[in-house]
Length: 63
Length: 343
Image (cartoon, rainbow over all chains, first blue to last red; front, side, top):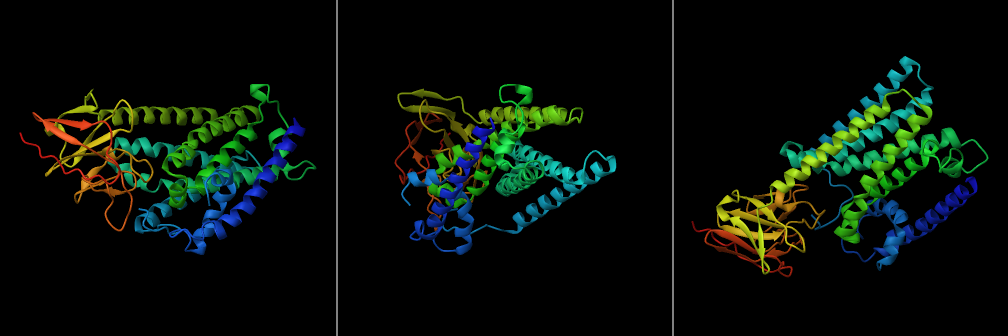
């Protein structure tokens, strides 16, 4: 069981890493043309955790 | 409303409720830890961890109770308005509890702490030996996703139906947390009375939800649907500036409002967070959602300027004092003048 758990934890790590890269792209470039979200730095920082967590959902929609 | 996004929409009421919430949490944590120290039941570090976990599950019970309570009594609606902040604080406390537990029990070995927590002990094939921390981990991930996506930006970005599905995950998180606490208690803390408290909490939530559903159904008119038209009953039985609702065979529920100038019908689902518009009322000539106060013109379904939110209208006719509403909604933006009630 421990082996499977190790693979799961590595998988989660990879997911989070991709999420972080995607999230940084999303809050800097992805929403730069968004008329209402593209304004504030604080708002962009607040959006980062969700972008990291749900990046597959966001990839499905054009950023 | 979605005219513009700001990081957090603070106002006097939110400061007030958040202040009470933070003070209550502090009092809860301090009482829990001091009582534990006094009774010498565990190490102070373990007590802090348990206090955070207990606080998170108590808050989750409060969050889940707010919806049905607000439906049962208007007095609880201010809590509904602040539920989002409750949720974010609950997720943060859950994260502190999870982080503390991960470091305390799994952080000093040679195995990756997450792997150790989800697979380092117990037996997934035996119910009573099920590794309870994996259930807590699942609940924490769901609560974090919900907290992270609680901003209105995500509601707009993901669209209300997807956002709503994502946030209905709170019930999955709750079930996982009940399993987490129940198994943890059964495996390591027998006789603490936590299982009884958990059963009482789950029972109360179930009763509240059933009562809330029954109250919601009470708003439904005794409707009859005939060839695309629904008879919603006597127009004068609709309370002034309030609504009755009807549910077509297919499609969203319809809210039929009566005001001085007549009867109007709109889709009963708020475009903000799918709130029950049929449970709202007309204030200053505008239908007001009971959840977050979003407003819509009964005749156009449009929010007042500068807001751009809209809901669909329905065609209404009145025949022999009875309200008939078209089952299919109009295209967005269709204007339907209120139909006068003549007795």
